[in-house]
Amino acid sequence: MWLNPNVYGYSLPMPLSVLIAPDTFKGSLPADLACAAIARGVRRAVPDAICAEFPMADGGEGSLDILGRVHGFTVRELTVTGPLGHPTPGRYLISADRHRAIAELALASGLTLMAPEDRRPLSASTFGTGELLRSALLELAPGGEITLCLGGSATSDGGAGLLSALGFCFLDVDGDELPPGGAALLDLARIDDGSVLPQARTVSWRLACDVQTPLTGPQGAAALFGPQKGATPDEVDVLEAALSRLADVIQAQTGIRLHNLPGAGAAGGTSGSLHALLGAELVSGAAQIARSIGLEAATASGTYDLLLTGEGRLDEQSRHGKVVGVLVELAHAAGLPVIALAGSVDLHTPWPELSAAFALAPGPLSLAESQARAAELLEECAAQVMGVWVAARRGR
Image 1 (cartoon, rainbow, N blue to C red):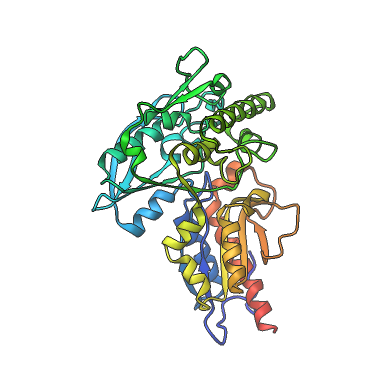
Image 2 (cartoon, helix red, strand yellow):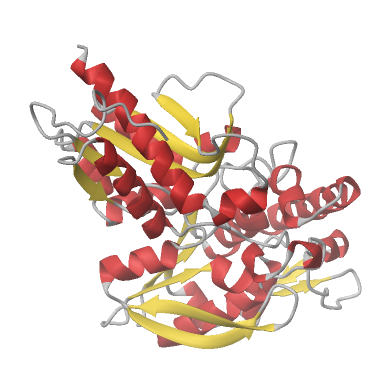
C-alpha cells in the first residue's frame, strides 16, 4: 500500500483516542488478535494514537475466555459429549465462593467442533453442554447463578439434549424417550420433569444470547441459521416443523408461548426451552460482555474520538444482538462515531447509526486466502481507514 506522507504518520493537535472492540473473525482470528491487528494499523497512520483494546464476544466463541479474564474464576475441565456423540473437551468457570458459574455452549456443542462436510443438523445434540451444566450445578452453592453463553451452535434441537442431561425426558406418544437431535422433536408428545436434577430449579439462570431471533417462522431458528449448520432446504422445513412441535408442547404444558418470542431461537432454540422450563432470563450476550469488561462505560465516557469494531461477516443479522449491532447502539447513544471492519460486508438497508463499514479484501481473494491473511488484511484496512479519518479531521 502506498502511504501518502501528508496523510499518514503525523500527530494531531490532540492525541487521537480510539476504542478497538472487534468480535472474533470466525475461522481466522480470535478477538484479541483482531484487536492487536487493528491497533497496529491505527498506529501506522497515527503513531501517537491512544488505543484502548477490548476483545469482544456476543455469547458465542471466545465468550468464556473473555469473561474468565475479567472475573478470575477457576476453570473446571471435563470430557463431554460432542454434538455428534463423540467425546470432546469441555470447561466452565466457577467463582471462589461457588455462587456463580459460567459456561459456553459453543465449547461443547459448537459448529467449530466439526468439519463442514461432517455437519448433521437433524441429529446434532446439545447433550454435552448439559453435561457441563450438570457438573457446575453439583458444585454451586444453593441459590447460585449460572450464565450460559449461547452462540455458534451446531445444533437445532431446541435444547432438548441439554435438558435431557439435567433429567428432563422428551417422550413420544408411546412414552419412549426420543433420540438425539432436532428432527426427533417431530414425534414429541410430552416433556417429563419428574427426574430433573433438583439444583437446576434452585439456581438463577441467565442466558447470554447472540441473536434476537424467535423460535419459529421465516425469521426463526431453523430458517435463519439452519443453512449455516448444514441444513438443506428440505431439512430446514423438517427443523421448522420440529421446533414448532416443541413450542406447541411447551405451551400446552407451561402456558408459555415461545413461537415468536424474541431471543427464543438462540442456539437452535436452546434459549427458549430453558426460559420456559427453568425460568432462565434472556439477555444480550454482547451487551452483558461489554458491561462486564468496562467497554460500555468507556464508550459513554466522552474520552474517545472513534470506536473501531468488526467481525468476519457484516450483514443484516449483525444489527440484531451481534457485537457490531450492540456497539453501534452504545456508540450512537454516546455520540461516538463507529466504523466496522469485516471480512465481507453485505448490508442491504441503510444503517444510519453506523458511520461506515469496510471489507478487508483489497481485491478478489478466495475465502481460504482471506482467512490465512486475516491479520495482515485487518491491519492494512485499519491503516487506510485511519488515514482517511485523520485527513477528514485535519480538513475541518
